[in-house]
Length: 476
Image (cartoon, rainbow, N blue to C red; front, side, top):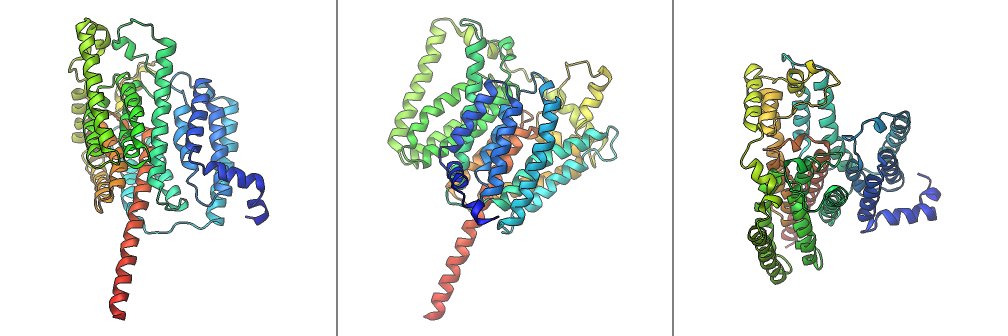
């Protein structure tokens, strides 16, 4: 990199801007603007330019993280796929992809990389192998198995490996990623609010029919609720860590309300214990324990008052309509699980692959049929068994043990908070297919990457301290 170009005033100013604490919030606002104006390809161009600039002119690629994580939240391909397949879009993919790839190669050639030993390296390799081996020699193996393996692996491994080598360890990395997660959470909150503002008629029962309208384009209401629920530990971390962190309790109320209004039972199921743990931790070891305790009291009193007023006014049929209709209905989960376990029984070694459900239930209907049955087992364990067999499941378990090991091996409050996001995602994936969604996998890879960097830094500090102690003993 020519020094004159690197130190150019405009480039230096832009570099300072993207290092600003408010930068993720600005990118979040850009993401929302592109979403509300339905400019998906424009958003890809904007975030692509941000990433390319970072790769070319910034040694530490951390500022590219928000762009990589937010871009998927601007897309609305479930409403209309045509804009993403237009000639203009294809040109953007080709030209932009070539430029971005060139900037990545440039970064690897010009800047110093982080070559620390990777604790999670073999676990990620194992997970990728599980994806690629899934369905091998099975009765329903086809090209879509390979496509899904590429998508899953690229979503996790590309993000993890790129940033693990190009992003430096900083003491505030965990805090930075937590802020990015919370901004992402409130991008989703704003998208849900827009649906209610533009489509909901006051007085309409919040029923199963209404729930079907809570569709964000990049994901259904369930996905939105689960992504927000997954971010709750990051929000609790900001309450714990930030100066005047108790103010984030206001965002907590808004976030939990948004989760409720997605009517995702899975998200609500795990939000309740997450709230109990997060609020308790901040009341016991947080910086503002008394204020947090007062907030908990006011929160419980407010929720209790609202629920009581709904029942006293006889409005429960309106506000709780969806839950009254669904009750404890399993939405065919048990039937799906039985079928996937049948796939495992048919092909116990490598499973039947990730395309098996589509091949059995949808292929014969033809491409014009849009009422496709679910393609996922809605349970990561059952899905891995049915699609990848015992080989893939063991490889997945190896990866899973490594991820838990890196979070809990050397206990650290900061890492445990961010690890809580991963644990929430995994719990949610026991009842829904969140683990196999690209937007989740991107956050998953980034969270593991920063947790690992923090862990490695702590290990090196301990080694340095032990070395100093040994040297001191020798001199004595």
